[in-house]
Image 1 (tube, one colour):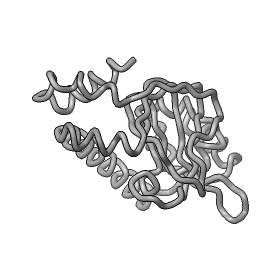
Image 2 (cartoon, helix red, strand yellow):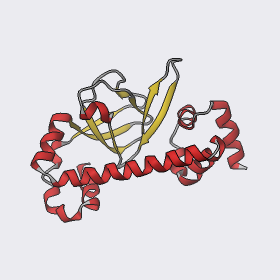
Image 3 (cartoon, helix red, strand yellow):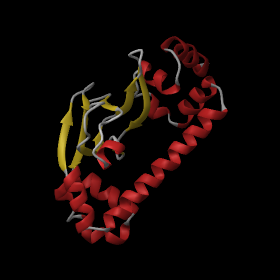
Length: 191
């Protein structure tokens, strides 16, 4: 399974193809069942995950006890609670599996060792983070400039295969609507 990460790194930084094999021993394969929280809000995030198979979401619980999804991760995406992982603060978010999930994980200490020993990996992670930031900005732009119904249609049209993988309550929370509103939007979208 580490070959999947190998291919992903080489795709983004092909100049270092020969060296990529040397970094793979830093990563450990882990499997999680569906609906398992792997990073808890209020705890320190110790791991950074590369998704081999499955789907995860990042969410927080508001004062009313409602879960609010803010991001997802599917195959070949990276996920962690960045503020906690990069610092020593407690996590502001939960990360949970939405499907049976397999990941390659790296501990915080090993991540720092990896970057010191193989500086080219900083280029890789910079590209990953720049792409993620660009996607987040695009999502915020669309989210801020259209109605929730239009955002639903945009997301379903742009990412149809991903949407199929989200439970309705999670997708509704991502859009910022109720499950009942999502049912109406889904029916309208299909017609």
